[in-house]
Length: 80
Image (cartoon, rainbow, N blue to C red; front, top):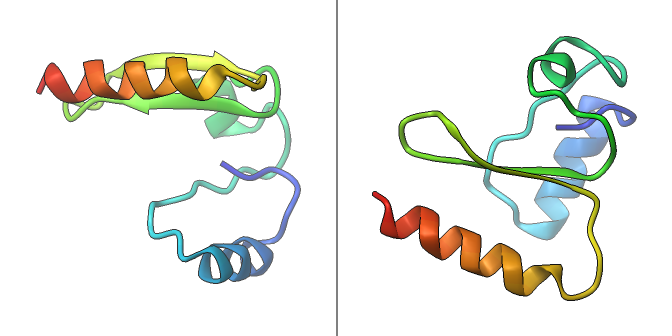
């Protein structure tokens, strides 16, 4: 989800990086989508299962978190 960039800037960034996953645009911090998902800080990461339920929510990112994130993704994939 992007709050602070224009849709064109986000599209350009995704094209440059080769990202193909969907991104949600919200008009401001605390906008509709941010409120629904209770986004209280940036970055906030969500892992969402095939059933649409939020499997995990994390606010912030610190060095070393990638290991925990990889484990969470593996657990999510194993639950399918």
